[in-house]
Image (cartoon, rainbow over all chains, first blue to last red; front, top):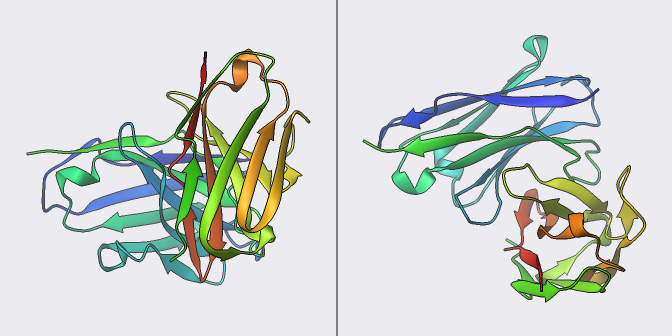
Length: 121
Length: 108
């Protein structure tokens, strides 16, 4: 059974760095075909892709947020970590992680429940 | 970066009716890299269609996807009460993933 679960702070202050962890089960981060993406959704708005990572450490980032994002993985812990620097109130959103089941197709088949992060002083 | 534009923004229909949702890309997208998701309030998105026309596991056959190049369509042949939700298209190209702005299918 494939599951993904996001964890991290509920509230961060402006200018702080956000660190989110996605803990996966039911598949391995060492699987060459699979990857993990981070996606966010501000309240009442559309989905926005942030980044993804594969087993060989191939990484890609959203063009608009690239300078603020870092994605990494700890295969032994089955975790993917996303950091976002210089947080602003406009970054308030539900943050999701999701699995890419096939490197060759890049769709997202299993999603975590999401974690709401509020940016406020 | 490829921009996806979904239309209409809102679709008001009755149960049993046919829903046709459009996703237009700013440049050509490989059909292999086009997917559709359904999202209900308070829930994570659910994969419906990948590769433009392949249904994901467990998705009813009233959902179908079609299209190529810059124009893609999600069709729900007969709306069931549980189908009223927001639908997003997603593409992959040049190492980037982008989502459309969504279409809300609401009960008329």
